[in-house]
Image 1 (cartoon, rainbow, N blue to C red):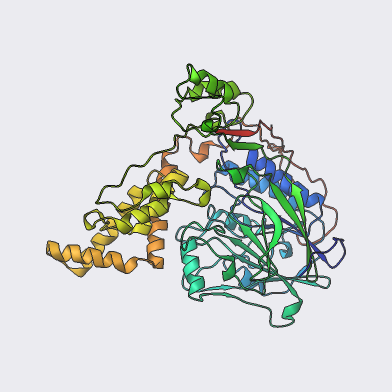
Image 2 (cartoon, rainbow, N blue to C red):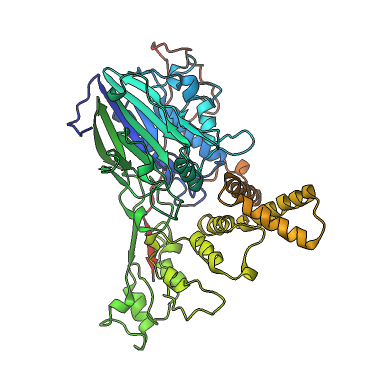
Length: 562
């Protein structure tokens, strides 16, 4: 496979690539509430202007597992505006669609549905934010799929074995095998790869003539021993891997010299965390494929709010500041027009008063400045051998997580400090969920869920004495370590926590249909449009009112760390 000079012809696939759009992120924020919808509008508009064959999304189209009505309404309106129409589709589907879309009530690609007209098909895997949940295993993408707006592929219903069957497409002489796998807990998928439980099926004929494109939504960078997916796990017959979930934009394809395929990481289209990777310029990609050759065109996103992040260490400016200097607070405050990494004995000034100066200049004034004092670690007490000082001295960019600290602590703690009900992995994930996603009930729900399950187990076993109970609890706990059951229990606890959070929401989704924001759809509520003609007919469509999308673009995001 080699890059080539892009030329559009009857043998060239044109595919718009995007991942991690996170529709609905901060949708109730007075300034940033429309950001994700405005950028999604830009992405779809670009696809239409570039006359792409289809759009490929790498997961996390939605930020919430249960998006609000306003979020779904906005998404559906934009997809209808840009992806429905009379433009003919110039490629064919050759694979068994009943296998590709086996979980759908309508197991065929949407543009072949005789009841709707699609001009730009959208193919998408689900991410970890909008993954299937509940007894029916449904997600927001399934709603869009049932409405005929997207093609949700890459779902796996088995926790024992995964067979990835590609969607086989052909345009002219170019044959494209589109593989995908929706988000799965990293440790479970890692274990399945190690145990050879993941199989990627290939066409029976002319295997060397197919361009193999794979879409995945998992940790790419290493966050723990098994909490990521190494690129070496993927099959070497692949040509290009579209990697979702990672938010830093590294969209230029990079060659894996061991597996000999290329990897593109488009990154997110909105900054959802205060990290250096989010500050990089956001892009989407226009991928052209002809035969076994490809070309990736970087397209900058112009509606993304600009985000700045920088660390300035006061101790590195001894000529300007000293902790003993008179009125050093005022001098530091005057100096802090940028972000500062705060350490070395300086006192903090009033961050709230400082941030108020930028209310009219940035979208997130509360985040403008953060004071961070570098901790000094004393010698560890004898009963705890964990070197937290060494662990915490690592930079946050080195992948240190709360989950890792919890595991490391219980690995070396005394027996009296060991967990008896929860596993170290379960507790670590619950604490990480509490820190990363502010799921305040994550730890409590995990304990409650494990307590209920353990009580049922003890009743079934019929143990009576206190010694038997202790032994049975320990045995029950040990049998779940490192198994799929352990991961399932953690995910079930998180679902309960999310449900409680939604119940406590001060503003129910039912009331969030109109919140005074600037995002509007020009729809005449008093008139009912005439039903469109049925089938794939390309005749006159009559008056097709197009909704107008407007959104005020506020200032860029800014963060100071002192």
